[in-house]
Length: 218
Image 1: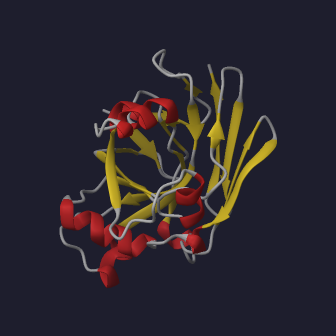
Image 2: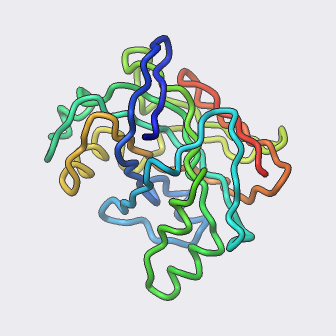
């Protein structure tokens, strides 16, 4: 079982699935040469991809192009299917800082062949997660600054206000495809500025009002 922790609580929360969205920030889509989608582009990471704050990222031997992507993580606290957007935030238990680590070279090759790219997104340690904070401590999930540095050098600096699909809409849309269960996590996309990480790097991701996540790269 893989779990996450909630700030101020002793009990760990068992994670089910991690539902992720691609191309949810227009500038990030443009920097990768991808069109802005008219529907959410969703994929799933298994719970086995989770890495706790302070952990070590292990880049698989089959890749030489691992990229960082800072994201707001949303922890589902109440299950639902076909959740109305107006009710979606009532299903949220907390928010955290996440990295959606991506083997960009592998992903690019698989996409060119029209093949699925889970092995580029769902490998072990590909989803570092911070401790989560309770929903009520975040006044507005669409007004949060995201920053990421590698070895102290700024790489990403954005705001959740730039999401093409805000958190409530993502929950609603995702729940139209998958039943969302308590313990599931939704990753909400990354702003522009993604780039490579290599052995020996230290990555620090900060979302103001939510938390800080630091990992080393083996």
